[in-house]
Length: 480
Ligand code: SAM
Ligand code: SF4
Image (cartoon, rainbow, N blue to C red):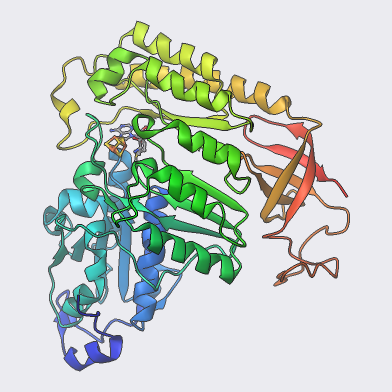
């Protein structure tokens, strides 16, 4: 593929009096981006930001300071989708002189209809087209008021050398994009297209480079991360890749999300047992405890098959923390089905879960199912799930009081005077440190140079004794 035109080259095409959005253009210099939705979107935005910076744009903190305003959107539930249209409405009148772009899942799903609903939008591009972003920017700069990138016909993952990572210690790596499943409620196969995996070589090169740059944690990302299949002749599966990333110099923690139960093999559990750098946490969305509902959802596993995977984890040498996603009120979910979901929570004892009311999504198979459940009833079921899970978490977290956990520092909470830490099991463990009470303003830490009481501990790890437990976090003190 031709390399993208640079900003300098593009400027050759820019006509100073170009008109776009109906006004005289001064050329775009600055951009603002807001991201909605999942970690995949957050990481896509890091790549989009890196691409824009490499083209000479400057990022600004507020939309009113920007020439180019981008929304990287989520359409997994109706509420998420509405958010972006509210944002765009705010600029319907006073957005003159700016160029607006809608990226991500809403862009892919709504396509050119967005131009009708929000005529001040000039760019609509789904994630499968981000590699063409530089070309699309040229089109915008040369005055094109309707630029689209909506093709899903792309067998490559979006891999760019320009990623602008947000966090200096933890880095995301997308290893697989898209989804080949067809769950009856889900828009992702329509918005992110078919599965495309990166080669194991390119993933490992990126991981090694991150290790050399001083990152200590890597999160491997994919809508179904464990459906990964190396497209190169090496042909590695996910467990093989996980083991290799778990061996990369300098990388002390490796996480991965999200795993699909159908593709969750025992080898993944064995890899976690064998490699201390692989975190002992697995997010394994079940959606429902009823095999009938799972079949109607087209989830490709039964409750029993799911529970077999839970058993592998419970029988592992390491204490693997398990979390999940639940959907309540899927069409036709009876009270008895719902009771089975509650019983599953009792049986598995998750450390945390995300729970959602079923949301009707365009193009999905579940739209045509009869027996839609009322919003009130979905709300009632959701509250019951959340209350039950809260009780489970209080119990499970209080079992940890007195235990010592290796904790990586992510930041400092001025209000509570505690360092914000995270355990390998992905629990938040906030703690106090007798020598390092608080970071000095602007303090950073390099290597193991902890001299001075105002050091910023972000990126360091400590043994912390848990002294208190709440439903969503732990508190403790450092063990010296
Ligand atoms: N690929 C992952 C899997 O299959 O488990 C899930 C990825 S999806 C982006 C994240 C979560 O959103 C799902 O696990 C599901 O619980 C929730 N979700 C997706 N579509 C939904 C819908 N139409 N209504 C409510 N929740 C939904
Ligand atoms: Fe959506 Fe199902 Fe694909 Fe997950 S596996 S992204 S829930 S279609």
